[in-house]
Image (tube, rainbow, N blue to C red; front, side, top):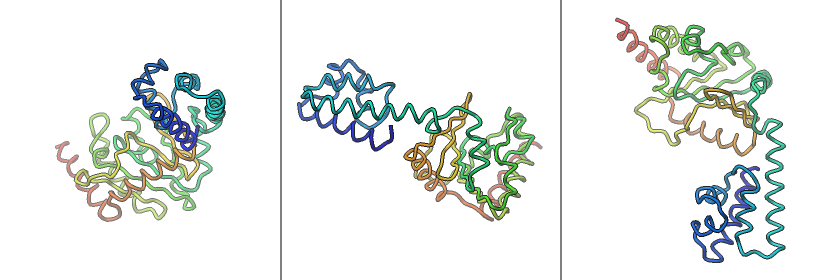
Length: 261
């Protein structure tokens, strides 16, 4: 279900609820669903199945024709969602990301807790318990464009005993000088217009991937990709780059050096 379909269905249900004068609590009680679930449906968010939405439709005093039309829209929307999950709309297959890395010409990544995989040194990756350095082998391809936004907090969060951070920060400074790489650092003193709840990597306009503790989720729904791209643009505006970023990297490096003394 794309965002437009979900919003249209949710708005129709809300309009009918308000038309009969019921509160959200009342409709939730009559339909046998949690009030939070009803709120998600009315706000255009996906719930676990079309049957849940059908319960809400059944609870409303709708005519047979209107109820049938709504049920048809819901079935079509949820059927489309399930089909896309098998594709690339929502995937947990690790090879999906590898294919995207090889095919797209532009990549944008944001991280607030760790160094992006493509920018990690081998020592940092080992200390962090990761082996896959992702796009790092592709940074030499001048035909590709890379944009990385990292919070200062991520640069001051270190794996292991922190001994890998001096070389890691030197590596970031070196990478920032590449013609095909833009590296932005969001200082702790600068407010963010949007606070992403997690790091993410955008592969052109095709997909976005999100790393979790147990998997890497790839989403290619156009509305979702657009939302992440808008979020990255906001973060990007708060970041410093070029010489200003390298000065900040040097300051952080000096702090790590002092810790090691």
